[in-house]
Image (cartoon, rainbow, N blue to C red):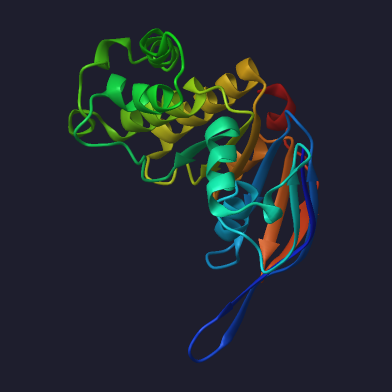
Amino acid sequence: MIQLNDVSHHIQTADDHLSILHNINLTIEAGQSLAITGSSGSGKTTLLGMLAGLETPTNGEIIVDEAVLTSMNEDQRALFRANNVGFIFQSFHLLDGLTALENVLLPLELAGAEASEAEAVHFLQQVGLSHRLTHYPSQLSGGEQQRVAIARAFAAKPRYLFADEPTGNLDQNTGATIIDLLFAMNRQLNTTLILVTHEPRLASFCQRHCQIENGHLTELAVTSPGATDV
């Protein structure tokens, strides 16, 4: 479970004092899926980073499974992320000099996982890329690169998966395939999924939908059947 208590974040620039997040209170139960939407600059990516332990708020408390992220130093948060968190990014963030298999394998090896190559192959098979194991990112389409990124994120079997505009660089048809794959694997591993998106269809597949505007968070009613039928 993730719990935010009165979380605020402010940035002091040379010319101004910017208020990014305002007194946010939010609880996300284990296994839930949550979409965060909002206009550009609304603070949604900042909020996602704080939920994942990549950033710390100016004020307030963030608790994940009884671990108080806001009381940890940078090294402690990094260890927490390594053991509990997976990421999927809009720009894929694959290493160009590694094959698809090696990109999925790298975080498993860093974590000291046993039979890591077999796990990497398994998850690439899960995303339909068993025929692309030895291909480099430059040899893959955008959709294939995002599938590698999904395999990499799920291979470590994280308790929490954070996705920042996971279909933002894909065409509509490819994006729809990625959405279906993302939620299918999320169900399979019962991972808590928190994503930022501009796409109503992607948000509709989540069990919960929050909107952030001018740093204020509002929970919206989920009316689409996609949230329960996927």
